[in-house]
Image (cartoon, rainbow, N blue to C red):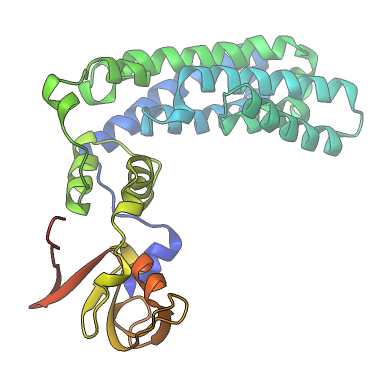
Length: 316
C-alpha cells in the first residue's frame, strides 16, 4: 500500500550515494555565493534578490543533475540570455506589466524550444526582466549582459572546474562520454534484454540523479531495440490452465491464468477467459481473443514458492 502511494506521488528510492548528495549541495553553495556578489555589484543589494532565485534554480540542475540535458552549457547560457532579452523587450514595448510578464515567459519558452536551449530557470529570468525593480529597468538591455550573461558564465565555469575534481561528475556531459570509448568486445556484443536488477545496478554505479524513471528507461530501450514487439507471445502459446505475465514493473505488473477457452478457426472468435491471480487487477477476470491476450503477455510463468518464475520457451 505504501509503495503504491509513493508511486502515485512520483516518489522513487534514491540511488545516489551520500557523497554525491553532499558534493551537489557544496557546489550549489559555492556558486550562489559568487552570484550574490556579482548581482549585488550591478543591481544593488535590493534588486539583486530578484535575479538570484533563477540562478539558484540553475544551480540545482548544474550540481544535482550535471549530466542532464537541461544542465548543459548551451542550455544554461542560451536559456538565460535569450529569456532575458525577450523579457527586456516585453518590458520596454508593452506598458501593461501583467501582459508583458506573461508574454515574456511564453515567448521565452517558445524561443528556447526552437533554439534547442530549454532551461527552466530561464522562464524566471524573463519574468524578472519585466517585474524587476528600478535598477533592473534602468539597465535596459545591459541587464542581458550584466548580470545575466555574466552570472550564467560564472555558473558554467564553476560547474566545469568544481565537477572536474570528481571523476563520476564530468561536466559538460561530452567529457564523460569521450572518456568511455567502446571496446572491440562491446562493439561486437549482441544486444540482449535488460533485467530490472541490472538496470538498478547500472544506475547506482552512475551515482548521479537521473531525471527519468527506471520504467521509462526500460521502455525506451525496448522500443529502440525492437524488443517490445519481439517479446510478445503468439496465439498458439496461450494454453488453458497456464499462467502468463505482462513483465511490467511497479503497479502495472500482473499475472493472469487462462481458466476457460472457446477455440475457433476465426481469430476474431477464438477467445479465452482469464483470471488475474497477482498484481494489477488481482481477483478480476475478463475475456479476450487469443491474439489480444498473446499481445498482452510477455512470457509464461509458474509459481516458485513466494515468487513467479519465468518459463523459458524452446528457442527463446
